[in-house]
Image (cartoon, rainbow, N blue to C red; front, side, top):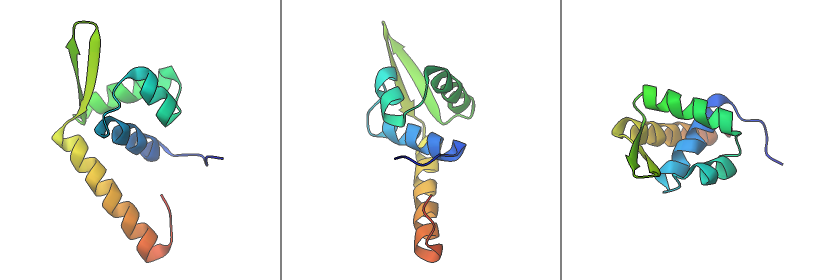
Length: 91
C-alpha cells in the first residue's frame, strides 16, 4: 500500500517519470497515480515555474524537463539521501 504523498513528492515523481521518457498523459496518470484534473493543474504549475516545457508536433504533445527541472530532480535526490543517511527519514 502506498502511503500518502505530499505535493513535493508528487511533483518529484511526476518529473522523474518525464525524465525517464514517459511523457504521454495516460502513462503519467497511471505511473504517478493522479487524476486528470490534478495532472492538468500540476503541468500548468511546472510550466509556470519554468521546470517543464511542452512542445507540439501535429497531434502529439511532448513534455520535457528544462534545466531548472533537471536541477530540481538532482537537488531533491541529494536532499532525500542526506535525510535518510543522517536521520533515518525517508521522503
